[in-house]
Length: 376
Image 1: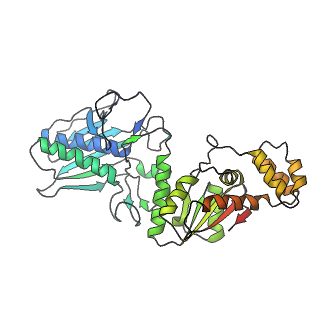
Image 2 (image 1 turned 180 degrees about the vertical axis):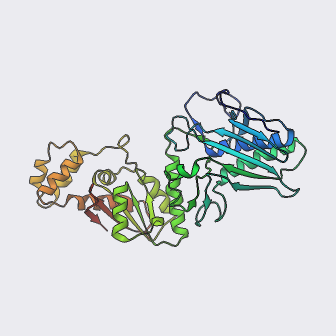
Image 3 (image 1 turned 90 degrees about the vertical axis):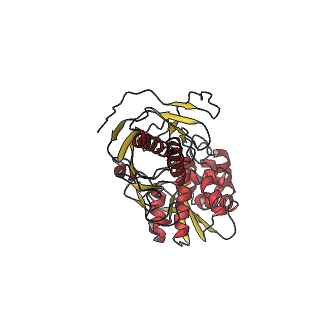
């Protein structure tokens, strides 16, 4: 018997733990929440021959989310249901993806087992919270699925014995736009989610990837890792030291997220690489380097230039500068090593957040990937 459900159902409804309506923000939900909802619907249909639509699941920190089904199908000992992910206002690569759960009956005592379907990756490197060889379904989503299916089984007076396969059609192509390959997750996406809710522009996913990259590098026994603010500096630092991909951390603007984690998860050597303006921000004490949250203090930068040997004339030339690049150009024109000075100041800020067991060097690259300053 097959039962196909199309689109056009009611919008999702969020509630708080005490069932009060949540604020009407454009939050979304994680792939883990979608997987749990799809698995719950499929398992209930497997036990009762009826799909709940919409389906409600409990979030890890309390409250519920109610999601409409996109497709579903019931067979003799197997049920499939899917949910379309809405990431809200967050620019999530999986926004609009279909998350599919197939639940199959298993022998008594089997318990719940998790499997990767199309578009869901497999863990191939140690250091992640999931063992090598396992499907890349993180502990949080696994627990959500386990809780949902156990509750459904209890209501039916049985034990939760089932094989749960999660798939994201097209996930392998989407995964090419993520850091999964570098983390050793091959063949597709990860099923993620700690709270179950996607907070718009929370940047939590990027910081999570930074932390997992460090974990993988440590588990691989790498003694030297490099964190870069962008692709140009990352490629340049990899060429300079001949580092493997697993040693490269795509830090972006999240200097603080990287350094705080390394303080409690140290490595023997860290190379911190970036463009001049980003490292000026770090030198001036900013730990989040995005232009929306931190700005270069140009007057302070010119003052640094003025205090360097031979920097007086360069500082005078840079007095009307409107960008950090213009100040650097004035320094270069007068052969004053401003990039070295900024590297040293940035290193002092970063080193203050690390333990002494991590040796630190800071490299400044221009937009052509040429090394223009270093310290440490």
